[in-house]
Amino acid sequence: MKTLTKSVIASLFTAVLLSTSAMATFAATPIQKTTAYAGFNKIWVSGNVKIVLTQGDKEEVQVGDNFNSENTTIQSQGQTLYINS
Image (cartoon, rainbow, N blue to C red; front, side):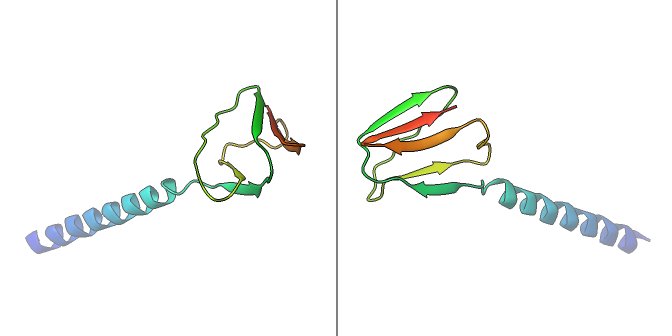
């Protein structure tokens, strides 16, 4: 009886450990969409927008999983990138 109890507890512990690590893996990889916009040297933002600028060799815009394309527009006119929310 002790062996059966130990086996059941070990199995439950393993199942909880595996499911927790799987959830942490999926939660740590947010969905992002990348769009290339070239030739801009100004950014004009209006509305509720969070901007993070990073230095790199490409000019691109990445949006996260909470991006709402119905309420937000991203467009380039001349050398200005416009982001409206």
